[in-house]
Amino acid sequence: QVQLAESGGGLVQPGGSLRLSCRVSGSTFRVYAMGWYRQAPGKQRELVASITSAESTNYVDSVKGRFIISRDNAKNTVYLQMNNLKPDDTAVYYCNAARSDPTSFASWGQGTQVAVSS
Image 1: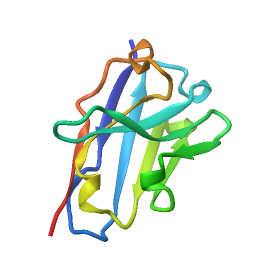
Image 2: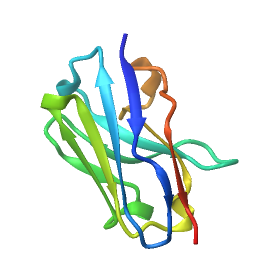
Image 3: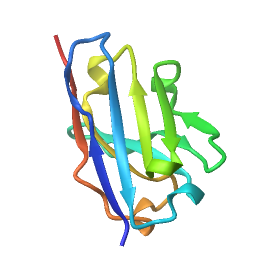
Image 4: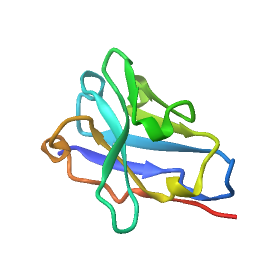
């Protein structure tokens, strides 16, 4: 059974940075495209960044130029470097497979809370 463990969130001022980590266990991690999702209060969960097994990346327009997704297959970990954070980035961040039905890969983890506020 695949398990996901996100970490690295916190409270940061606008313009600040955070680095999120997601440890994936119980899977041949390196063959899967992975993504970072976020869910803000009252909104649907959205995919904000993804990375393929070949390390090709894609971002939603609202985070392009500010967020960087990366992976370390040796550590079964995917990262999200978030720079120049804005209040609209406030959400719970989750990782999972980058596919139309992420839960076909793994159940959602607990996520990590990111709050951007002065």
